Image 1 (spheres, helix red, strand yellow):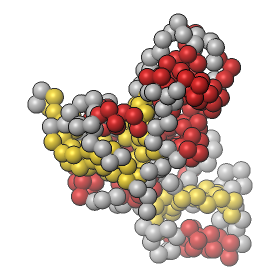
Image 2: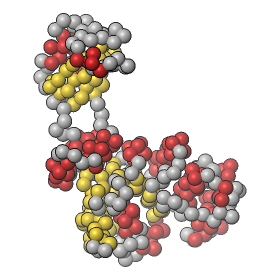
Image 3: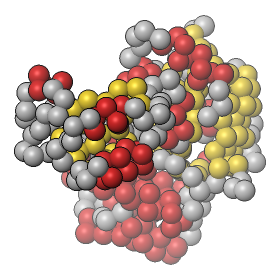
Image 4: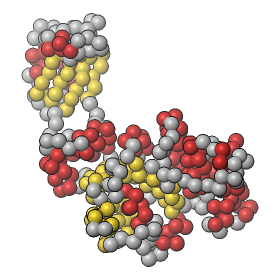
Length: 345
C-alpha cells in the first residue's frame, strides 16, 4: 500500500470571520497526481499556503512527509517544490543562471547545480533557450522554466497552482504531458490546483471537489460520476442498419430499459427522431436509457435479428458534466450536496 505523504485532518482557516477552509480532511499518497478542483475562492490556494507553512491554520493538523509545516516550515520547503500561477524570474538573467541561483539558495554545490540545471532544461524542452534572458521568454517557456526551477532541489512533492493559466492549448497539452512524464519517471507526488476541467481530468489520478472551503467529494472520475449520477439512467447510443418490424419493441422490452427510440443523426432534422424506424444514410441511431448496463443484450438482439451493428457506446461522464451538474445548482442540488457529504467516494 502506497505511503501517505500529505495527511490533513479537520483543517480550518478563517479570514475576517469568513471560513476559507472548513474542516478539511484529505490524504494524498506517494507518487499520485491529485487535483484540487473548484471555482475561484473555493479554498484551494489557502490550503496550499498552509501546506507550505506560509499561513497558520486556526485548527486541525497537517503532516507533510512526517513534518508539521506550521511548526517546521523550513524542512517542509526543502522537500516540497511550489510553482505559483505567476512565477517570477530575474529577467536580465538567462534561464540557466536563474536555475543555478535557485540551486545555490537550496545549498546545492556549484558544479552539481550547473549539471542539474542543464539536465532539467533538457527535460522541460528549454535546452535551446538556456542562455537566453528570461525577459524574452514566452508565457509557456516561463512555465516550463518554473517547473525546472521547482525540480532543481530534487523535491519529493511538487505543488502546482494553476500551472497552465494563460498558456495556449498546444502549450497546455505539452506542459501537462511533461508533468505526467516527470511524475512517472521520478516517482514525484503532484498536487495540482485548478479550475480548468480538461487539464485536471487529463493527468490526475484522483480529484477533490472544493466549494466554500469544504472538500465535498474525492476519488477518480469514474467514482465521482457513479456517485453524482447514481439516480440517472444509463445512456446508450446505438448505430445500426435499418430496423426490422417489431425490433424496436423487443429492445424496449429488455429488462432495465426505460426508453428506446431512434435519434436524430448528423444534420437530419430532430423532428424525424421520433419516427419509428427512421433512417439516415441507410443507418438508424437509437438512443436507449436504462437502469442497468444492458449493452450486451442490445447487441445480441440486433445481431440475432440480422441487423448490422456499427457502433454501441455507453455515455461516460467526465469532469465537465460533473462540474456543471454539481456547481451550477438547480433543482435537486441540496440533495446532491447531502449525498456527497455523507458518502465517502
